[in-house]
Image (cartoon, rainbow, N blue to C red; front, top):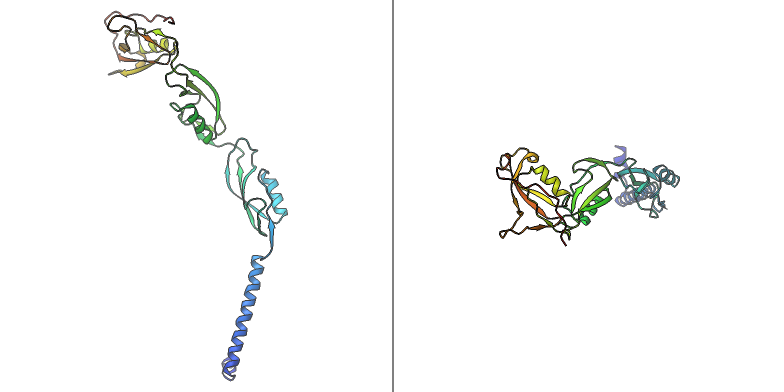
Length: 267
């Protein structure tokens, strides 16, 4: 009540002036406190801690008045465990004091990943896939196959859980060889017998049909393509890396069979 009487008993211009003065004082207090809170015009250069161990990075940043917080981790096998890979803000950036520096560190133990299926990939594509997954290219060897520089086998089966940084060896096709062999007659042999004989010569075998066959290894071959002879009775030739298609059945063919003979190279 007394405050109301104090206001009403004075001229209007006095009250307006008092109100303006009050607003100015409040603005001054606000701006001053804002500068204090945000530490206006107080800045420092962020130390570069990339490549440092996490403990060393914390000490360096703390000494300069910065906090440290881990926001992510990854694995790079060429870097020491628990070393700083990235930082935000970056080193040598000028920021306000008392800032927190967010870091990404290298894991101490490589994580497990699933081995991809590389069979059928070109060598270049397989190399890129391994690199992208954090795996290493191991030893490579080759064997005759028409798919030159294509991955035929891999040392670790696809789907296997392995650690990043593991080396993977590959077997690549080296193309169709220059040597020629007489096409062997496979009729009457089991698939396992034919496969073993052909693999020794670098010739591939493919099951075209196996109706009613549960175990292909013990099934008998009753048809093949190419056959041993052409329509004129001449012996056909085949090269390492090429393929013979076979048809399988559970019973041995009645017709006389020709045993597999070791073919001789032909110039």
